[in-house]
Amino acid sequence: MKSRPLKHSPFLIILLFWASSAFTQNTNNSIFDQSTVKISPISTNSIHSDFGPAIVQDSLYFTTFNDKLVEKSDNKLRKKEYYDLYKAVVDKQGNTIGERIPINEFITHYNDGPVSWCTKTGELFITQNYEDQSAKLKPFQNEINHLRIMIAKQINGRWDQLVAFPYNNPEYSVGHPAITESG
Image (cartoon, rainbow, N blue to C red; front, side, top):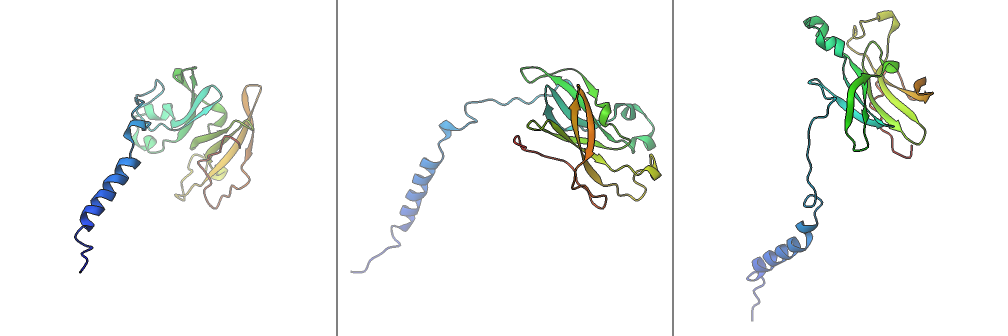
């Protein structure tokens, strides 16, 4: 007697597929079934490019265009917009309250931010452009202005002790820091 193994093969494949699907996709226990996500603007949003949020103590730090430059109507000046660091106070529910405030301790002539906060050491890691003192207010003459990371600590409620990250190099960019909670 000849056996016909292919006769029952499609049925077996469909049965195996159905069984594996039924046991691997338990939709009743999905995290999305039990929660609703609502996305809405916060009070500190601008119509410009706000990015790089980081919770630092009781505030939300973020990077956005300098308000004074954005208000200018001069197109030449608008092409030279640079990012600055701002903060907004966060309440116990996680909502920003009040106005956004520039963090003057970190504002340079060029781009500042984003940041990363280390709760373990109390250090703030900030991305900034190198500032070429010989080309004041013309940072991109060579069309290249590399990024660096600076490290700050807060002393008596004010950011101080700004030091360079040890792996910075003016020949290439080191930026957009990220640090784990454990440091």
